[in-house]
View 1 (tube, rainbow, N blue to C red):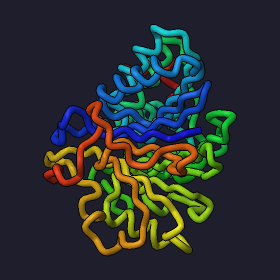
View 2: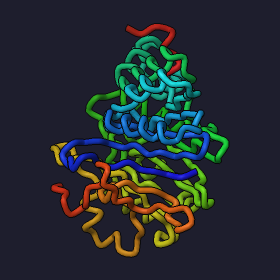
View 3: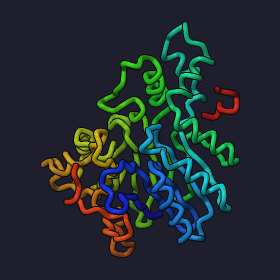
View 4: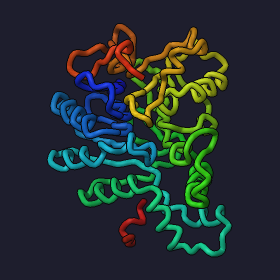
Length: 321
């Protein structure tokens, strides 16, 4: 498979486009997150130019809008064309009993906990409902779930990890972070894939670094949470040799009050000797070997922004969630 991490559009450095990473071969396209309708448009364009693709896989890393806002528009488009579509997401309602046990609150009932989960993870709820409406397959993204025959597999989080995160998310509204990440982010669904040149890539959304395991096994690692410095430092520190890896940063965070991704990392001495591919510099395509093409693609079709220009009621049908 090949990887294509989408970037900005039309010289717009203000909009928070969020993440969208494509993994593809001749017959399959995996979309890992789709944070904006403009990304959904780009996937549509991609499919029109890759007519042999029949299998569509959409992996949702976590609930945040900058990873999910383009998913329903993409599903709407896919409903109009003849593709086999599967959506992969953490389906938290399948582990309500475990979550209740972790909460250890006798005042909570099974049904009230389900409602709270659906309210908390509202974007995933809406995506699952839409996928069901179109009769698309929805799969619980648990460890060892195969996403495609081309060695694309869910590798995290474990059931215990995401159950603990969900329990914390609904237990106390004042508890907002795990290791500096929001509880929404911490247990992002992680995807491993083997690329065309046999390099292995780990995509991890906004996962807390301690939820990432066996990092030395990967050739290419997505740095969590848009390349925030603290997360990058934690990943670098967990590796025996960070200099022999490629680090993918998907930093399409815009310049608003909620922005803030890789700027500190790219200015920091900690990046010295590290091979970092950043969507701030345009679409990232991997493998980067000359035989396969790739690297940072400085396109003129609206996807490239030079880094120097940057300024900074619940029914049983929902139980699948």
